[in-house]
Length: 140
Image (cartoon, rainbow, N blue to C red; front, side):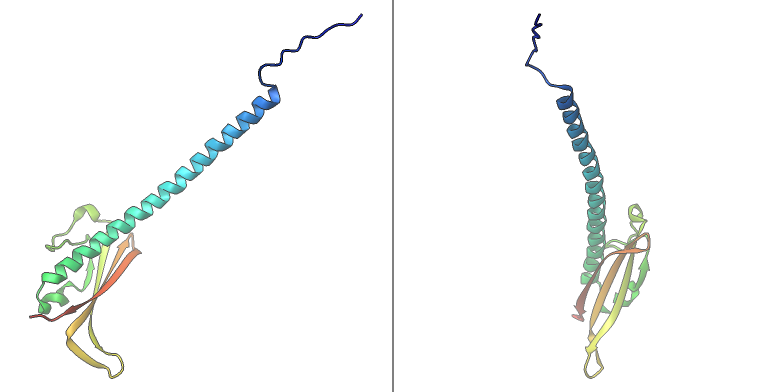
């Protein structure tokens, strides 16, 4: 006596279902890992953008400041100052370090008092984020 088995062909097997579950789990894990990496990259970009903003504040300040008063900016500003020399309390974790050096002939060591190099370094929690230098001429 032969028994006929009727096997239904539509649907997924247990192995196929487990394989699909593993793939979905891997996709979710990859998305979670990449989300963390993108968040860290975004935080670094925000820090760099803020540092460039703080450098531009000093650059704008030195553009209209009399040449004789530039030396008063040298040093550290924490909290950082804006173009009106008002401390920006919202950025208290940042520090602007300003160095002002007379430009001279590097071969003859003759200093020219009509030009200075201004270097601004922005630090966040005492770690450098960005730095920029420019030359300012005595136009007075």
